Image (cartoon, rainbow, N blue to C red; front, side, top):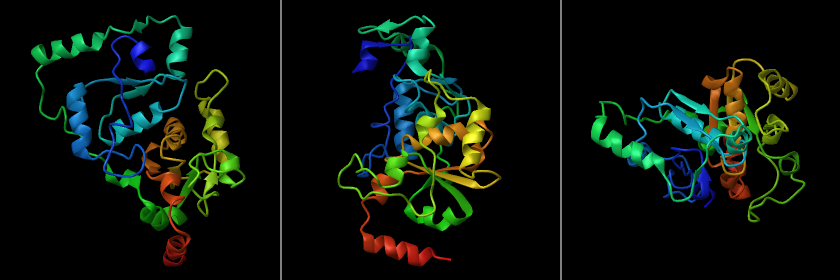
Length: 261
């Protein structure tokens, strides 16, 4: 695993595939309160801590981590723009395989920094996480954004998961997550981000529901909306296309009929 080979000193691995509701068939499904608290206690990540998230490759999964912490009530969360490659460019100190300084910190905290009331009082804002029913109930009064490539959105190429249908959810807009990242691997300026959303018609004060293939890269889009002041409007279709693309056509027709205005 790349994280074990080298990392920023004192880092811990926030594994989205494990900090998830593994009882669900979908990949990296949002964890329950109990699951999230269990992992935070193991990692000794308290609500009073400052959290800095970074990716192995520029910007990829750190936005999902950011929204996970924020929606579980942790306010002091940041992303290292450009991730580990940017850190390397700046000649930052690197911790190699066999050394995990964070273990020393956690051992010290365990013995010398008492846990305060509320340190692990993580509670998910459940209204942030949508299943298909909630998407259909709200999509006519919200912006629904597909973060996949245009080819996948338009159904011109097969899905990476071959069993899934092609195309997009009716009424969804499309903004490929890669368009939000510049050539250096960092988020574009707020002005550029705002311009990209205006081009697809996202303006004004409405809820914004994001989805992608499995609920991961949609968070790249959603985090970019945090940067331009839209955080309170954000929602995630957690199952995303993995869920939608597996639903039988007859069942989808029933959804359309039920929620048709």
